[in-house]
Length: 349
Ligand SMILES: *Cc1c(COP(=O)(O)O)cnc(C)c1O
Image (tube, rainbow, N blue to C red):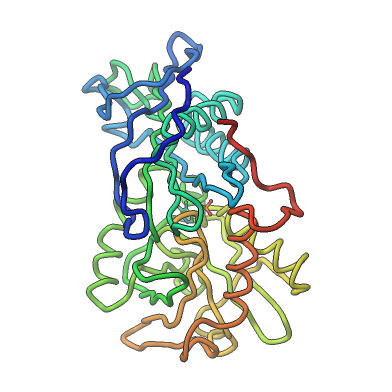
């Protein structure tokens, strides 16, 4: 273990984008002959794997995304990391990969954060330390079968907002002709194979003037699913917040938290159910795209079949519901108020 050096890098924290910025250490553990190694911190940014690795040929790979933030009192906080460990376990199960034990997952995350202390953005900078745990199928292989070996790696990078703009800025989404995930496919797990197919949809969405693609259900193209890397929540009149129910959506930890805040703190009536995009759109007051990277980005409009459709309460600016949810969530994440749900986990320095 390294001893933490409590100094900060000379970085313009306020102007970071969502890009890879090299840090000093990453945590790596390997699975071989049916057992995990203890794991260690290394400095190499390069992964070396066999040319036959299943992660390279067959997409036997999964990952997670989380953030560490500095609280006002200097503590470094993770947000519900045990849920990321559990979701990676589900991804492993779906792709027949060796499971990363929760203890190893959490230790890897904490060690990677602690070892790169100097890269954790200071409180108030608007930036965070993005954490990317990943699991790769490795080892000699050729046929269609699960890998004999695995590498679990956690690297980190200081990041600014995912969508450019300061504070809460409105985004736009566009429905394209591409699907993200089939109903009984792999949409509900965070596996690499789900994403390359979406690059073209994102590219088209951007060319059409949106920030990101929005997906409808692949079977009928009528029900709302999610954006490229964020789940959707929608406020309706009568203090209600709804979110799509579908087996192809990646279950966002941010969304789960936002729904609970809405119910327990804002007294909203919350519901997860199929949402018919065209038939129900006129009722949408505000929409938010939620995820670790997006936090909760208010959606102003959606391009669907060449028509821009605007949310009722977002024409002029960020609506009150998304603003309240954003404030409540980020205040907990940054330790700016007591954490009534016990969601934050401190990384001991
Ligand atoms: C990671 C991800 C999300 C957001 O999940 P969080 O746990 O909130 O970070 C949403 N949708 C997709 C497709 C994702 O990959």
